Length: 267
Image (cartoon, rainbow, N blue to C red; front, top):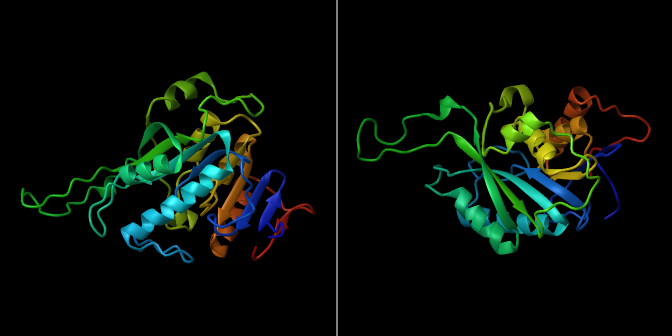
């Protein structure tokens, strides 16, 4: 496949493609992956079917994690934002199942951050009300699993960190408390706030490292890259979300399209 970015400016690139089959991201190229893949909870993503069987969803997860493993450097990391569990379509411990697949494909486990979104709207009385007959227990948190390829100690890259003492102390505590992002404000059905990738990028990469989001969505991970002097690559299958990501990069990160920038309708 010829090199054909949807958008490119300096060290930020967006590709409209399916991550599992893309050839735009090279093996051993990536220092850090920060992503939140589809949750299979019937969200309307446009170009992606988010209501397959659970078995099909886990098979999709296996395929994209295998691809992720191949594009990571030997000391590359993966910050994976996924739910703890789900209730739609039957109760499933999504986090445990995905962690099992991740380790099975060859990724190594380091730790988990519990993201407390403080989303009290999720505290809905599902199941039986004031009765022991069938109550649902719902945790209003999400997980950020920290995985790596071969070596946890990072030896590649510039060696330059840009994190201060206060943030380092706070972010190495495995419970992060900050609000989620507004779907209406962003124009995407499941955006995460820029604070999530910003913390992951500054904590787990050096300045100038290459960060990938294989499910780019509204482009939040690339915003964090642009604002922290990292190289960013985003892969997104839906052309409308590619456009949205570029609009946010131009407007929120002050990335301007000049002669060297490329903005195409398709990859």
